[in-house]
Length: 585
Image (spheres, rainbow, N blue to C red):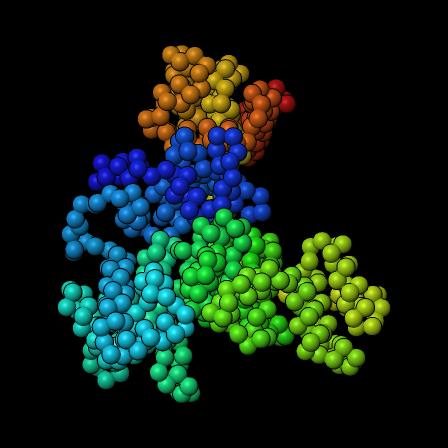
């Protein structure tokens, strides 16, 4: 297995792997970007191609490509290995079916189900009707193949029987969200029956769930237009954006992502060349959606059927996105009773124009709210204020805030003072910004608990790695100031420096296979990205802090000993300890 891991590492560059998830910019010999694992405004996430590693100096996470995939995809090492092997074109040794992980089985079941649905689309009478429906909606044969669209036969256990025949048990099919337990105690029955199937993919284009649309008898009230895979080990709708697997590169390239509501909207946008498009698929924007989008862009174009009055989910999602620093514009197409797919089918240029004419979120608030209420009616004026004032209050820039206060006063025909008074008592509805966007908080807590002494020692080592000539600054004091780990690290650097001189690259190569290799990698990267000069002043400052801490520790220890001696009545010891205390002072 180790040889396969090495083969994968040799074939994949950490910059390409991480860069497919995180927007990176070059800084010296390294690359930096916003950390995908915790919420930050300033980039503290670095990728080092020379070391084939990544590190966030904000939350502390770091490692190689396997660690990155484990963190970003939330999978175990085995799944990360399988994903990276696929990217690298490395064929893994055949696994024992008895030890295949449950997660991998679910991936296999979902992919097999997808193939089953695809085949049904063209091979059954109703499947052909479903395909004809898709073609009439403007979806081409190429898009049907690309998005792996399918049809679920209108039978109770057609898919389940097929999967059982492939060696999976019915309980595993239920866990994949493809079957439902029967109230009558019979075998579980298929969840999707007689519907067009839209497979839902993760970032690596693996099938994790399905959306199913009725296309016959769609007008019947008792028939749900769409049903979706429930929450499973693989699928969580609050964490999934339909089409992100195809849209991520275009989103980064255009520095903009278009969000639509439906599967067909996303497919038609991609088909027309607007590949930076995803669909939220029946849910409002969630914190995890925004965390995912933040990897690729800060600019969002929303094409939703929106009602901003009241405490709507859409309004909360917009509020959260604004609080996370997204620039938001609104593509207002629903007022014309046409969704993006219909506009593109009619003329793709019309959709291009709609995006070009997208309004800022504040313009949309004003236009849509004033269109809904009578600005001359006192009661309606109050309702207008309820909708627009919280949006104004969220604005961070006071000049921008003043502009919209002035505009609202003019349109309502009231004084700016009255608006400002109401603004003071208006609650900022962006409390959603306090929602944790990722799991970085645990690491931040751990990092804050790390002793100052260790941080100072690590900083000294990083500066010595950057300039081995700094070793002479710590020669006389490291034995009394540093912990055993740091002493060992310094000894390794010192021994290598005796052979390699002050050549930092040669020294690093010399200690690369040492037991502290990963730590040396991290500290060397820290020196490159955080310190511009030779480090003389920084090292001296760190040593001064360590000496001060050492002195304080000694005084605290002696004070404790004095108290013990006093309680024991050993006044000779008290006098000697006081002399030691005064000597330290």
